[in-house]
Image (tube, rainbow, N blue to C red):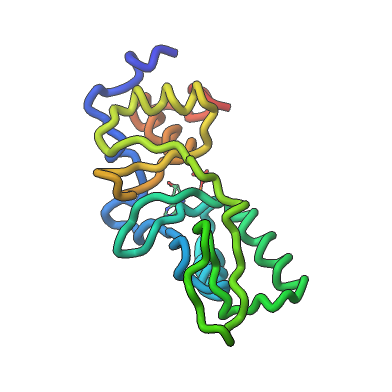
Length: 177
Ligand code: ADP
């Protein structure tokens, strides 16, 4: 397959990324301002395989990426071990937990399960380059930014769907398997 032949040159990462305008917003975790209960509620209200971690809702700079599976296992383990982790415990992906009330529950530190350098492209990256990167690096997903702000996500399946739309044929026959 020659990407040049398959792709409209006008397709950019921003055209393929999710969420679309009509979709619910990107489901993100913040690095040190969500509780265990808040994270569980977010994870359980969606089916996404992973969640970008950002500095804060006001400052959506990308900090890392966490897989749904790893989040659920870690929270489950922490709750079972009964080391004081409860629904109100703060989930901390940052290096140092923020100052907390001395009588509050201990934070759950999850920096260890976060991918600290998830792959990103800018919103104006042409799709032929993005696909090339997916192929060469064997990516499952890639995050999309604009001026350092996180905008969206592109998964391998999003790329397959996009290619199928262009080629108007079975996605399984193209590029990945
Ligand atoms: P797949 O694309 O393999 O089904 P996911 O289940 O993670 O993988 O994603 C399903 C859809 O939701 C994809 O279109 C993807 O771009 C989008 N998506 C993935 N993660 C998120 C997220 N955290 N917030 C919003 N949309 C997401």
